[in-house]
Image (cartoon, rainbow, N blue to C red; front, side, top):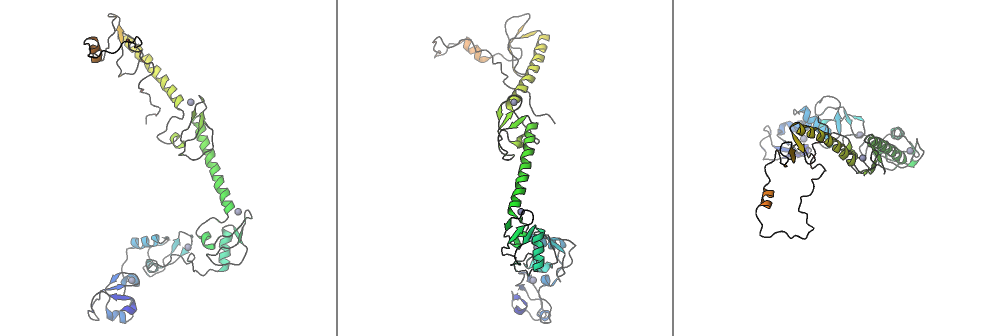
Length: 336
Ligand SMILES: [Zn+2]
Ligand SMILES: [Zn+2]
Ligand SMILES: [Zn+2]
Ligand SMILES: [Zn+2]
């Protein structure tokens, strides 16, 4: 049994009885019969391809090894057409080999024998001209960039794993895409009425800008100006628009109060705020919708044990009501 890579897990049961063993190659527990193993049958049903394997589970094993199956599961010991995602090449490993831990791709294996002509063709496809004979897959290979002429020493392995060939060309490409991002970002800011004052750092960074309407300096994040939870680009302009909407409300409210015979005595503060009014009949101020204030009643009636000091500066009259709206029903976010 050990010659067939099977480690017995229980005493010998007889040559024609199932014998619990571990297949040391794959680690699975199996129950071969000694009589079968001695006649040359493989002792592990999984590795021999005799066991039924769920095609989805088999595909998952291939994917875990970086392979994308290109055809339905053909059987555990049959060649299975797959794409090695790291290098893009088509390979035909068997499920059994991959499941036992073999490398997924003969092209990418570090010790893979590589045809020098194929190696040079791979380098040229990556835009690099080899300057010396093929040195090996993981040995730096002197090359010249076919686009810009810059020298370099990438390994064939790194090129096959998808790394860019020429460093200066890679940097130029990255800078170009960064410039494109910055131009797009500035266009979004200008559409929101802001002129950027410093270079673009990214959507999540505060970006110092000037409001083109009011001149205020603001630092919104680009991500807060776009998308669903859009914010006002300039708070000062938003507040101003807010105030205009409030004044519009106020005109309507005053007109409605007058219609009901009241003359507003203080600025409108919103529908839920009590406001002092004078009626045409009784000139004394009263609050039409509010209960009588207990604080005022206390101050009028009972003397307190410690009267407040009168130094002549303390105003006895309440301060004039603030003209600024305390709360605003206006919201810059449009309703869906
Ligand atoms: Zn096995
Ligand atoms: Zn590969
Ligand atoms: Zn280059
Ligand atoms: Zn503004």
